[in-house]
Image 1 (cartoon, rainbow, N blue to C red):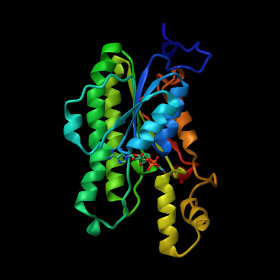
Image 2 (cartoon, protein in one colour):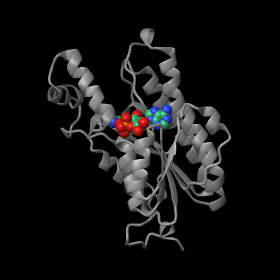
Image 3 (cartoon, rainbow, N blue to C red):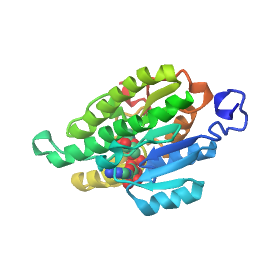
Image 4 (cartoon, protein in one colour):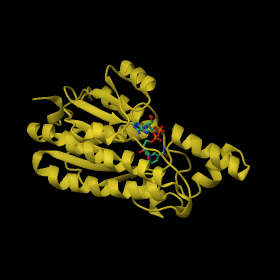
Length: 259
Ligand code: NAD
């Protein structure tokens, strides 16, 4: 019996012998997730557009790099993935009123954050079904649960991802496959550091003030989420104690969505 199939494992290597794929795995949350899954014994495929960073992390954790542009759906259409854990994490952000939103930006965001996750789930399920075991973790956002103005593409793609995750949970459950969304608030990553710098410029205030007065305004626990904290939650969700967690959405937002 592999360690991943029992709850008696005391080594923490609950993914020994498993293969995992993390999209956007070269940076921020994805890198923290890749490190966490590797520490649990998985062989991790770091899938990212950023080739150098993907290779560097793959070398660090003894995994593999897959340099891929997730908007290249023709590459993903006929794919067959032999992975036991799939983490759909890659994402980008654009902020603009709907009437000024570039249609190409809207399509690109949906392509990376909704179409690619669908194609990767589609590619991974046959292998997971054949083994009777699979874990799909979709890195959504609090914006998968509630809207914010000026983020039409991001909010609609994340809401779509929530729906995809639930349908996957319903279809996959009888085959031993669970599907879950993780919904972080603001996490200290390059994506958010850029947002902080942009807002500091727009409002003419210091970056620390943007964090305290804008980002954390409605956050009960007055700090940003750290990438490692999301990594730990994802790790737990792949573990034996979480095998009944499916079709759910797990916020990690310091109380933001409780308002
Ligand atoms: P990040 O910018 O640090 O990392 C994103 C990674 O995705 C990068 O390595 C980038 O190269 C990769 N990527 C982007 N476009 C790609 C493409 N076309 N093909 C392949 N890879 C591509 O971002 P992050 O903050 O770690 O965000 C990761 C995920 O977490 C995103 O889905 C984001 O929406 C979500 N999220 C982030 C926060 C936050 O506050 N940082 C909050 C909630 C949800």
